[in-house]
Length: 114
Image 1 (cartoon, rainbow, N blue to C red):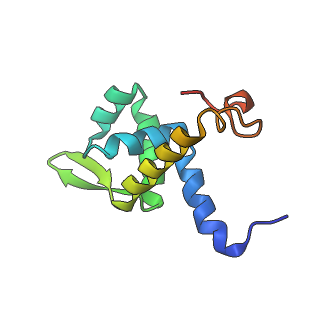
Image 2 (cartoon, one colour; image 1 turned 90 degrees about the vertical axis):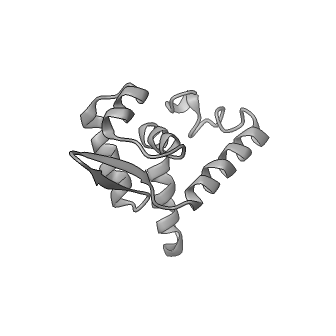
């Protein structure tokens, strides 16, 4: 059974948010601009990993950057993304461990536990 054509953009959005590294980057950018060096230090990730995920998020239109001297500062492009992240946190708080225990997408299925 395929996905309804009108759902494809939403599926792509949630897939982009479903990666732990991209979600961590977005959560960090929700608190303000950051340089690659800031993200690598704060998230404990390699520069190449952070850069690859930043490029993906830029391609999705969720973040952009501005050049400042020799550095780039990344920021969220859509304030609505903050509302989406807050709403997700409310859903998770309301459902407790139900999502984490899901046999398909939960921690037991290979998703990293938080």
